[in-house]
Image (tube, rainbow, N blue to C red):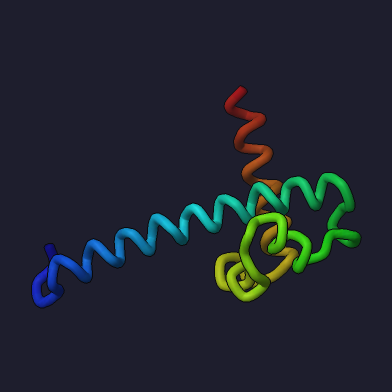
Length: 84
């Protein structure tokens, strides 16, 4: 517990963080599929968001740009490949 912050607010923040992490993971998964099918130039942010059950605003809040999302997908893919 942090001083001055009621426990119910800490629990709400933790739940929001868990939801945010789940949303971020869904967006990454959807982006992987979209980029694999269409490449960077052909992939559309609105399609990625729709696949993830999110919206473009959420996608940009998590990643900032389509190019930044592309880099995150590449990094996650390379990390998974190295772990094999």
